[in-house]
Length: 205
Length: 205
DNA sequence: GTCTATAGGAAGATAGAC
DNA sequence: GTCTATCTTCCTATAGAC
Image: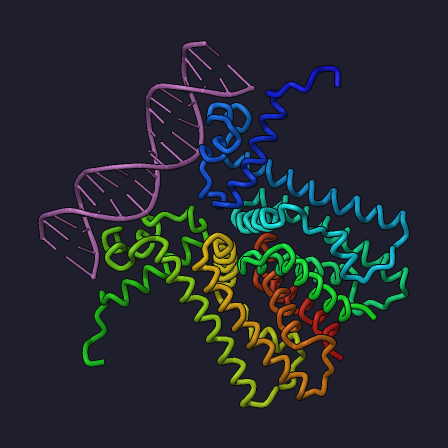
């Protein structure tokens, strides 16, 4: 860092707008969120916004790339950690939880991913980004399941990619259900753990 | 019917508006759909709309109740049919397909349910309706799985309610994926069948 | 029961000052 | 790079004629 972190650099402004956008989009949905509301939360006005993003659509697409990249990178790092450490003594459910990670801002992430998925049904560009991200996530989870099966000599009752898909589907669906039911983090974690354990017991022996 | 079906009865107008609304909401989302667009598709103007629904929110809530009731009733009927006929010689995957049914307007139904789910995360009233519907659906699917297990002396590797949840999750997630990927009905059906079969093989033996 | 007309406001995006 | 001011369009909802 040769310069004393400029508090108003272009990157900083973009980042603050993206963070604000993730909150407002989660709260109000893509169409329900106004550019004004996003700017207000970030501490800017619309002029600043349009000097950083060409349109509201571009902002949303940028956000999708940011959050999917972040989620994928986190999972990839975890998988590498586990492989270099050797697999610790954990149940499959615990392991999946450690890899997928219910984060700090659990609710925000779940709602935002739902918003992205729903909009991907109506937008080819979003669809392509979503499918690529989903395939990469499935692959990482498949990798950890394969490692797990090898280490503990488990027999899988289905192809490892199918197993990964079911685990991810369950994680997603359970988090969505928890948000709709208004469950807290502790209850959500318990639900995901229980159901992942049930699924794991069916998938492997 | 003592009167010759009036073509402009209140019920008829409501029904046409609801049908148009399901299409427009699926295409544009709740916030993206304008009341004007819905009226135009139904062949009315906004005046007629507001004489039948108090607001756009009320219309959406009415639509949610209509489609969830319809979906639930269809599944319930199928389960009853199968129980009174005795279970036919079908694989579990075929049976689930027959019960859940990928309908005519497959794409519309999937997108609409996604829209409802996403909005249920931000609206308590929608949330309550969604949770009630989801619980009832799970119960029906659990019932058919239990029948199936009894008839063929299958051992389930998890509680029957968990099994039903996983089957429904997979059905939903696969349909959503198919819509995002732009798959046709045939490919979607093949995917759902394959994955349901893989899941069934893991759940029971 | 459905129409036209309109009130009244909010939205996305741009232009130009600083 | 960020602001204020503004253009233009679109929206929900209502009022009152037919």
